[in-house]
Image (cartoon, rainbow, N blue to C red; front, side, top):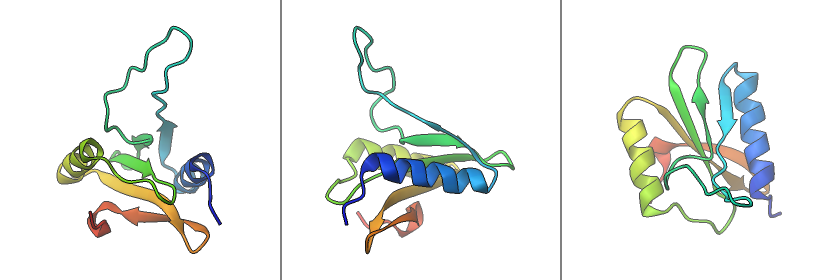
Length: 104
């Protein structure tokens, strides 16, 4: 089953908010005359935990790859003590994978 990126994003946001985390969806798609304002590489969901830690969640549907810029930014956030996850699909279900377990 191919879950859409939008479905994965909603699922991750809902699950982290259940834990009390506050997340915002970052959308850098130009619209009308508005240009995108976010630098490349920033995670799709960003926010903070209930104890004040930054959290970044990058959403990747089946077949999508993490770009070099995304990898650098997510690794930098991880090195700074932030929580970093990839939300993807495994065996037809959404999953969250902690950055330390990602093999690039």
